[in-house]
Image 1 (cartoon, rainbow, N blue to C red):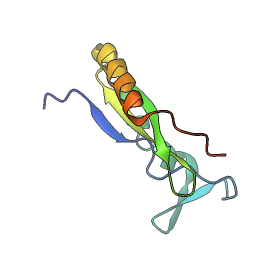
Image 2: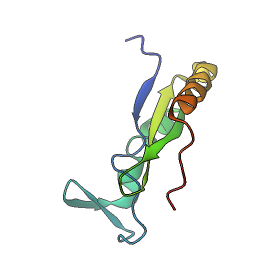
Image 3: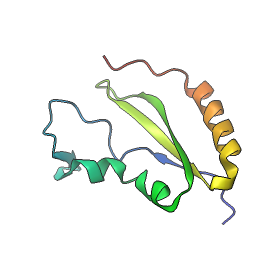
Image 4: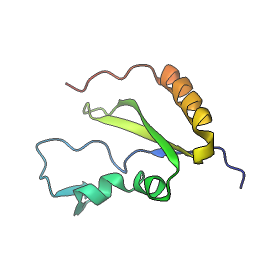
Length: 98
């Protein structure tokens, strides 16, 4: 498909509040295991050995961090880092949630 980059949310939901149970997380009203839920978007790239980077892009209305994952074929590491720097400049620094 001649795709240069794939950009997806880093996780399928914002960061989990510390007060929630550790072993499960709510996804669309259903309790799912925490770890597999949070690595769902980043694990495939890591498992096949392609380069990827996750960038913070903001906070939810509740102050929880959200980010984007950018994946690229490993031979394009320089393009990946260049895009990450450009997007970081676009989104600016993300304030600490606390």
